[in-house]
Amino acid sequence: MGWAFADYQNSFPNLSTNTIMYGHTYRETTIFSKLKRVLEKDWLKNNDKQRITLDTEKERLIFKVFSVYTIDKTNDYLQISFESKEKYGQYLNKSLERSIKDFKSSPTTDDKILTISTCYIDSDHRLVVQAKLIGSE
Image (cartoon, rainbow, N blue to C red; front, top):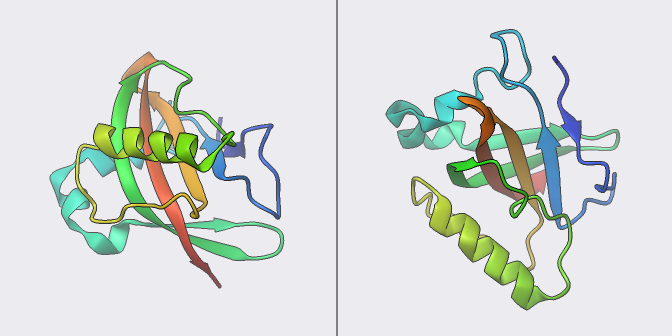
């Protein structure tokens, strides 16, 4: 319950177009237990908190949040790759439309993104945080 893990279809160290990470919020000691704070006004106002670091075996990647939303259990946001830039653009637009806040950070079809998905309220709802890759350390 305490580990975050990538979708089995993702690849490392060469990231997929959309790297999907899962983790539990079940207890306060689980990996994403504090992730629900992204829905609070204070978090949404604090630009410093809207960066995510992802350490791979080769580098530390930096992502900037562009979308936060809750959704009924579905698979439509769990897509790793896209058949065309047009389809990827449609996916990105849908993610932006779902967001509870305009983060003034719109990804393009040339960007790689990170999607964090975890349970929210119960097993039939999800909390989703999406961010675009902006650099590495």
